[in-house]
Image (cartoon, rainbow, N blue to C red):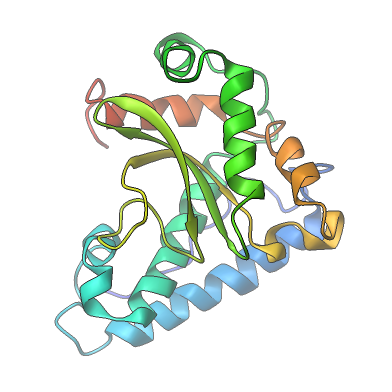
Length: 207
């Protein structure tokens, strides 16, 4: 079955002023659509045609560059839209907040390390907060790689990610990636991130 572009869970202008409407529309309707279309072309008529996206990512390094790049692009963006919200911001609570304090010392320290991972990612890529061996960890990946891939530089179960490709922020922030990352925290959907965390540590049955 061919992959399809998921609808945004909010309007294109919902994340204003932190992410502008034009960026959201181009990012979703053009960039992610291209990843979906090219992924479908890459697997059409092959033994991978009926595999899940997660199965493709787990073997991306053995399949093809097209599956790695476009499968990663599709998964990463689908994940990204879900952890953003017009009602986002604030701070995590409960188990996730405790885990952040344990791993990084404080919420502010976690944000600083995450922002550093995003700012120092050379060229295009992603910054991630994920669960590794039951503990939280921060890392970054190049291009459309993610921590679920067999060839990933960092391995973990992602619970939060930020797109630091220029197309994600350039219309509004130009070359000011640190400013974009600072604004990102105003729209993080901590309820969704907490759900990802609980699933990753096995405290909530996977959906």
